[in-house]
Length: 316
Image (tube, rainbow, N blue to C red; front, side, top):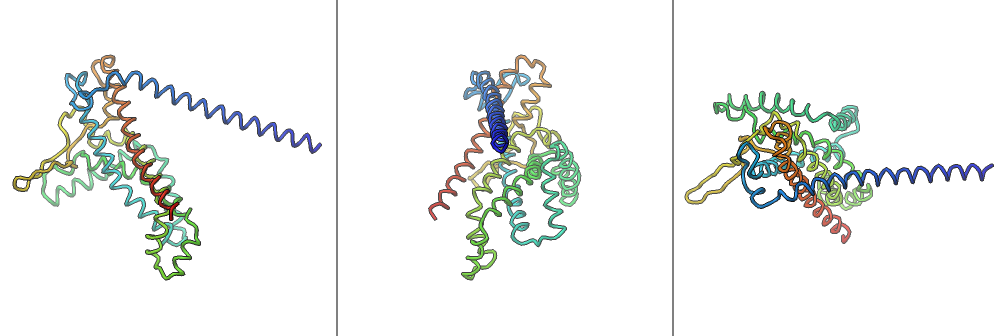
């Protein structure tokens, strides 16, 4: 009887393993076919002119350089805003905050924020950043309508809030993975709490923090809904930059108060609002391929840093 029971369990386990393996390879096949389709249709369009020129002739000709620049600018500002805030919040919640009802409520709220539809964040950004923060800044500084309008800064800030739960949760998991004995050893040597966090905990948690950054880049760079109300332009051949000159020396910087083009939004417009969607179809595939490659390059940069941190920890 026991042998029959064991055989039944073995058969069920074998079925489950094979079913899981089949579903994994099936999903992998779908992903491969999707990427292959995009590559086949998009590669013939890719050229230096396509990557470096502005769109023209009702966006049926020319390139996508303003959309590439806008995507990179928004993503970089998003990272600069989200990573320090998210990492700092996770450090406080894990290392300093006491385990109270309020702390548990905050952790639950952070986890729930990750499941809110992105369009809700877009509406929040419109109401809070533009209509409240921006309008009040304009009134205080008497700048007219400079900050109280859709702009690159508000789009980046909204995306930063969108990816904040990902960074906080991944950083918290990375901090919790550091053994308590390492903290106790540092305290035993006379280190303060901040010295322990800075010199013991954070170096070991950096790979996990960078994992959260990678996920945040992937989520933020591909979002379209949040930026619909926050500065993404239908057609804007000029880059959102400003020249700052001191004497004869000039430097070009990103202008956060300007509107911008965005790759995901550009693809959406070409597919839904173009006067000739069939003619713009190759451009859609080309822009999609560029967006995938751009996201991959941003991710691979973070992966390289994560690998180096892990290697450094291994040597120590």
